[in-house]
Length: 419
Image 1 (spheres, rainbow, N blue to C red):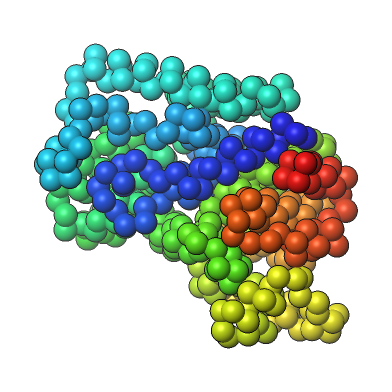
Image 2 (spheres, rainbow, N blue to C red):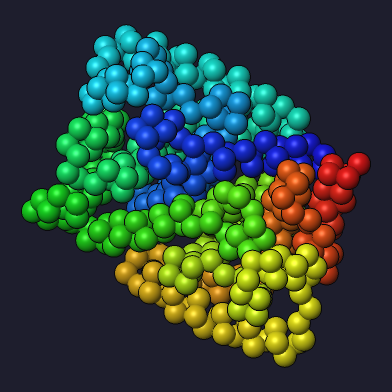
């Protein structure tokens, strides 16, 4: 358990590491590696089934693909532009064109990147249980070497998710920017379904008169654009407590997905693929409702008053809790029905979300506790930084967590943060 805590603390850093390509292009408040991973996992889920791939395995490839960047950093842009000027204006001129490299140069860069990232990944996972360590390494190598069907598919999706993000940042009028990202994407995308998905992107953003065989691809694209809003949505609870630059909803979902995988497979009773999907779904309604807490509507309006109240766990009567739950449930269900109304996985997502909210299945009950402990872990990090007291989070965790693995995790957290 001690090793798992250390692993989670390292992984948590990915919520604060911005992607290098956007930093160089001076994007204001660029997405983090964790936020990118969140949407990559979703696009993998939505499209992998169309290729009859192992969806759970493909989602784990997406989840693991950038873990090495905890130590290696975001290397791809750095290796493509090794001599990029430090001066902003000169750098802009260099970045106006995509790096033109020979096949030999690309192979050399690929080997260098692979060796550095492999070393970083081994450093990250070396203390994990052998089964966990081996799964991460084998899936990551399958991704990097294109040696597995799922790895090859996710590598193409990774480029497509980045392309979508570039259009969101720069629009389609900036010829230089969107041409660069299209060129980078077209270098590797060859899967027939993904080539058609690129046509869906062109049809939507460039009004090109493409006729799509799979019209649902446009609906999937629109869904991905909507959930992209969660990358820029800070968690309300941390805002209410005065945290500076708090984690986003997308960043939180990434943490819950990692925790779900890490602890879900320790017990044969749990379906890990279901846990991962449920982790991705559990906060989706925030796209339209905004992030919420059970207490935001009853807190004082002034910041000082809110902080004082939140120093302790808020106590509500059973009737108050039921009223808040029902009101939130109806509002959130309406939001998630609107969000998923046209995508093929609508029924599955709605069922997973409702299962989680009502705590019906054993996976839902377990994930609810893992979610609570993910919030506690983030709170402990903020407490260590001197920003808040984690006391109310501890109190809530003690009252709501009873699974043996959750209790072990809490005990290890106490040792880690309080000695």
